[in-house]
Image (cartoon, rainbow, N blue to C red; front, side, top):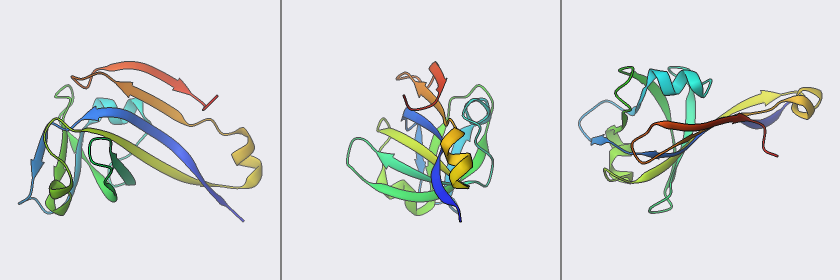
Length: 122
């Protein structure tokens, strides 16, 4: 048996672009992905703090240092440039692993600079 647990979270990213004509996904700066232990192609949930939308997509790599958070394809209709979003990744763990696992949390400022990183929810 496994339990779906929080793997990592990017908190309060600012949407920098929304591209309706792209095939799909979210483009995220690879430096921020590395900090959050997220991977290209990984399924994630996005929560839009501004309008309450919650949806799933997958990650594609954005240019390092660009601080980009671009929603692509149909997801572009669920955000506006400047909206605050939370990017959430999950993992499957055994109950024993879940008892010990500490998710990675990355908090960003209004310009998508990392201002805090920590592990765990307590």
